[in-house]
Amino acid sequence: MPFNPELCRNESEVESKLIVQYLLPQLGYTPDTWHQEVAVGSIRLDFLAFAAQVIPFVLDANSPLSVVMEAKHPKQNLNHHLPRLRHYLTSLNVRYGLLTNGKEIRIYQKLQYDIQLVFQCSGKEVEIKLDKIKGLIGRDSLKEGQLVDKSEVQITENNLNFETKRQNSMKIIAVYHNKGGVGKTTTVVNLAAAIRKKGKRVLVIDFDSQANTTFATGLVKFDDEEFDDIKDSNLLQVLQSEELYPISEVARKSNFCNPEIDVVPAHINLMRNETDLNALDGSRLILIDKLEYVKDKYDVVLIDTPPSLNLYARIALITSDYLIIPSDLKPFANQGLTNVKEFIKGVNTFRKQIRKPPIEILGVLACKISTNNQFVKHTLPKRLEAISKRYNLQVMDTVIYDRDDLAKCAEKSLIIGDMEIADPMSVLDFKPDSIAAQEFELLAIEVLQKIGLD
Image (tube, rainbow, N blue to C red):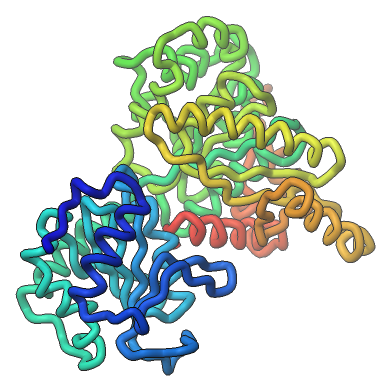
C-alpha cells in the first residue's frame, strides 16, 4: 500500500503510518529486528533497527550495523533536530540515522565525530525513491555492506553542500537572568571573544539600557554627552523602524578582542522609550526580521539582556534560539530562577503563536564563583546540585570563577591628551595563558558543541 504524507497530521501518525506500517516492512525489518522508544542512558530513541536479530541488543563497536529512525511533527523544521541526531549517532556508534516529519525524509551517515546527509526526498517521492533508501538502510544492504552507486554519490555531494550551509546557519544565544550582578556582561563579552578566536563570526547585541556591554567592548570613546556618537544609531533605532537602521549599518567594529567582533550598541535612551516601543505593532518581531538579512554574515549572535522582566528582555528571548542563565549561585540569584522560568514560559507561549519552537536552555552557568578552596570543595557542589534538584534546570559543565584578571582587563584605559578613555580588552587578549582565559575557552567549546557549531 503506497504511503500518503497527507495522512500524517501529527508525530504519532508519522511514526505509525510512515515508519511502522510502511518503511520498516519495505526495508526488510521484521518485528524482532527493530525496537520502539529505546532508552540508552539519557538518550531516548524513537526507533532503532538492526541488520540482524539481537536480543537483548547491545550497542558497541561489534554491534550489527544499525539505523536510528526519528519521527517529528509535520510542522517541525528538521534542521532543528540535527544536533540531537548527531549526538545519537556519534554517542551510540550507530551507522545511519533517518529523520522525517512525513513531508520530508532524510538519511544521515555517521562520520567520526559528525554526520553527513546522504539522501533526501519528499514524502510524496518515497515510493519512487524506495530502491535508493533500501540501498542505504535496507536490512539486506546493511548486512551485505553494499556501496552506494555513483548516481547516489552525486546526490550525496549535492545534499551535503546544502545541508552544511543549513547546519552552519546563524545561531542566536541570549544571556539572561532577572537578577543583576551575576556576571552577565562579563560572560557575554569574553564568551564572544573566545568564540571569535575559534574562527566563528560573532555579533554582540546589547539590550541593556545601562549599556554595560557597549562600555565593556570599548565603544564609548567620549567623556561628555556632547560628543555622544551612539545616541542616534543604536539598538533603539533598530527596534523602532522596520525599514531603516539595518543591523549592517548600526553594528560597530570592536577591537576589544583580536580578531574583532561586531557590536550593536545600547544607549540609556532605551529606558525612556520602552513604553512607546511597547505600543508599536510588531516591535517584538522587528529584530528577527532584521537579523534575517545578516544571517550569512555571522555564525553566532550573543545578546546581553537587562536584569529585569521588561520588554527588552522579552524581545531578546523571543529572538534567540538558545539561552544561557548566568548565576553566582547566591540565595537571591537562585530564588530568581523561579521568575526566570515563569518568564520563559510566557515567552514560549508567544513563540508558539509565531510558529517558533521553544527557546532551548543550554543551562545555568555558574559565574563570579569564589576561588576559596573550602567553598569550592564543600559549598559549590551543593549549590550546583540544588539548581537541578530544586529548579529542574541543567547546569553547564564550565564554571567561571571570580578572578582579578577579569576586573583588570575590563578597567584598562588610554590617555589621549587630557582625557582618559576606556580601552577594555577581553581576558583572552589581556592574559591569554591565564586561568580565566582558559575557563572562557572551555565555555566557548561547550557552547559551540551544544549548538552544533563545534
